[in-house]
Amino acid sequence: MAGRIAVLLVLLLCAGCGAFGGAERQTVTPVPVPEQSQDGRSDPAVTEDAVDARRLAAAHRRATQNRSYVLGMRLSLEWGTQIVSLVVEDKYRYQFRTEIINKNYTKRVYNNPNRRYVYDERAEGAWTATRRPTPVSGVLDPDPARLIEAYLATNVSVDRPRDDCDTCSVTLTATEPPAAFKPANNYSVRATVRPDGLVQSLTVSYWDRSRKAPVSYEIRYSAVGDTTVSRPAWVRQRWGNATDSDPELSDSQGHAAVG
Image 1 (cartoon, rainbow, N blue to C red):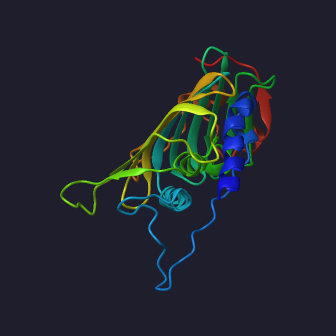
Image 2 (cartoon, rainbow, N blue to C red; image 1 turned 135 degrees about the vertical axis):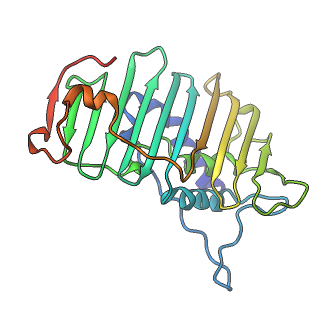
């Protein structure tokens, strides 16, 4: 397990290095499905006084797989700060926006089952509309499940509601980095987990001694199961009233400014 977490942490620390190339350049590694107990049920990821980070990551992936939601992420590394906003109705219907603060980089994606629209401020051909929609997993960078598995793979304290509420969220905290993650000072992680395994929020901060820079991740889910997605204003601005099935939109490109 220590070796597996070490590799995962290296991938996470390098994720920001590719952020300027856009969210789709990162490879999302599927979290293995936990083994089942003899009675056919999966062992719980969160017990009274411990957390299995691998199982929790898998539970989180299952909890978000077939639900709508709004996801906000703020990722700060030595190269800068990236802000991500993802609004998901289903696997192929979502809006995505990422921005690198103070780097003049913004990318927007609107995807539906018929077409994918992209505005990339950095790219030479900034506007594209293709007939090749991409599932929402293709824009998750870094994938929240990877962060959950990596940063909660340590000694975690579990804080449950006093009234033993089966429908209430639990709070997880830790102040020691994972065993494979030694070059870090002032490590702090806090997560809020729903009974279905969905991690509503995750905040991580520490000082990376090897890079001599602070690192922080903030992830928050909201409007779970209560989110819809419609065509955004920037798509209407560029392509007017054209429909998603209009063949003349396929693979079109051009240059314009976004307000």
